[in-house]
Image (cartoon, rainbow, N blue to C red):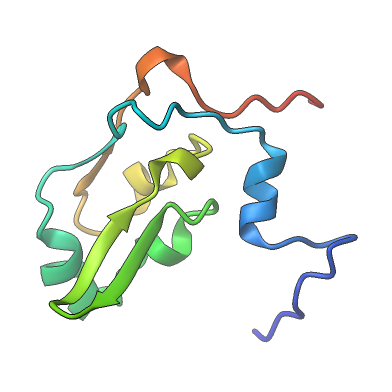
Length: 111
């Protein structure tokens, strides 16, 4: 499906939508998204499924970055909106969502 680009009035890009959730994670806290085996995203999920975490996460938490040493999996936990999609949809069941330190996360003040 070819979707039109976000117009900034009725539709927004992914990171703008994350900003609307007023998500707050202290940058010094440990990552609450644990990988059981950190090699699985690149060694297994990338060749078999094109690493789906970078697409199914609604907040853009997971990225595959290309570098000199080849692809690398990056977790941007500070964007997490605690939907737990990663814990459910990861084909290798390698991502374990845990409660963040201090109970940080989305605020959703307008709900």
